[in-house]
Image (cartoon, rainbow, N blue to C red; front, side, top):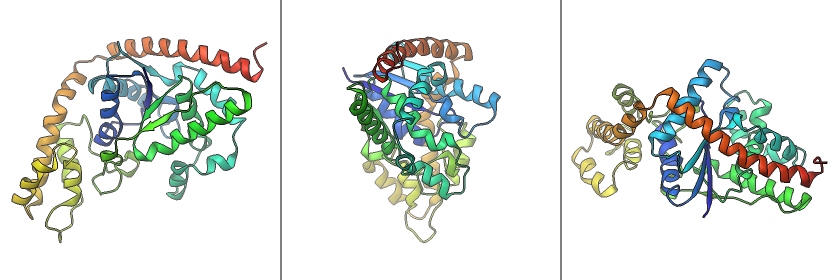
Length: 311
């Protein structure tokens, strides 16, 4: 059976881009795969500097994983910082790769171009992500198109280690759902918290309404393209065609229909989420982290032997 790995940063509330870009296909793939799903709290430290907020977000992201349908009896749901082998392996990989290799990272270059703080953690982000993936002999990593390069980095780092020290790591493959490889935001760009163009996955009716009503429309167009591109995540083009034809030029009617469809889709997941207490979630995270650490420690024993630090 193939092994799947994915993770999300606890850097804020999830949005529908997270769901359609990664979570939806992850839940589907987990039906026929062994899986590990990680709360990437050390990755979040590149941007989140508020300890109380990070603690809350860690629990909330794990709760989100459970709400969208991940089963902790079948899938290891764990907290990155509870498995120190991730950072240990990152240091070992750092001694193998070059600065020039990391300077090619799209995510780093994008943030640098936008004038955001480029701390060392952000620069080294792809190496920690490679460690996350490679520790568990991962076969596939479900990602959005924008994350494809991170999996490519993991493959290249695995190959370099294997060539240097002997065959140790699998070279993982990305799994991209092409139809939603890039989920559009309210401004037509890729939906991202850093762009401020998201629709919250578990927001209140008022929050969802506010986000949808903010979708940018072209007053000269017959049909609101940005609204339609988001709407087709929830309904087929065959269903949407007559709706948008009937509401030609009536942008509010199209947005109201989108709000109704988002609500109908999200409500069952929101109910599951609300039923989970903090103590329930923390228990699942603790048990999952123990299982992940058991796997990671065995892998690291092999790595230490290969590099020569195990005496």
